Image 1 (cartoon, rainbow, N blue to C red):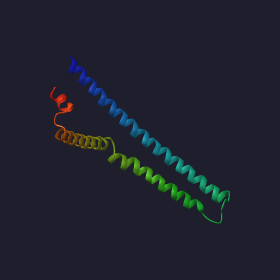
Image 2 (cartoon, rainbow, N blue to C red):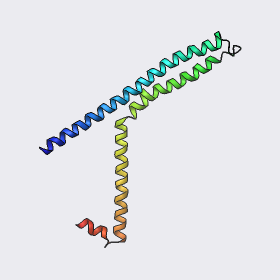
Image 3 (cartoon, rainbow, N blue to C red):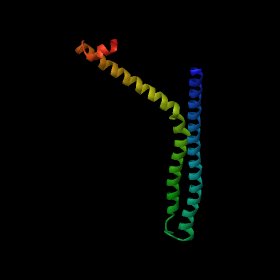
Image 4 (cartoon, one colour):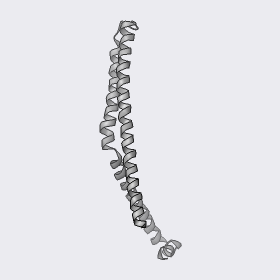
Length: 129
């Protein structure tokens, strides 16, 4: 009976992680779409300010502003659809496992050095018990 509950809790935890990951991805995409809408509206306002209201009309500065904003928007797209996809949960998990393995190896190396230097210590006695 205990193992059945354990499996159920593991499944529930997996489901929770999947749902949490899906919610994060939805939130990222939603922010990207908001960014796109704000970019379009902002671009129109920049054009209106420069051309209709004649603010700095001697120079078409709105082109540079929109170009810079478009560059930031492209970076946002890359972040959501490329970087997050490759550097997502699976990548984080594998990196975490690699780091834990390295830390365990270092701890084991230090433990072996301590055992060599101090063969009759409390550490060795505790391990034997």
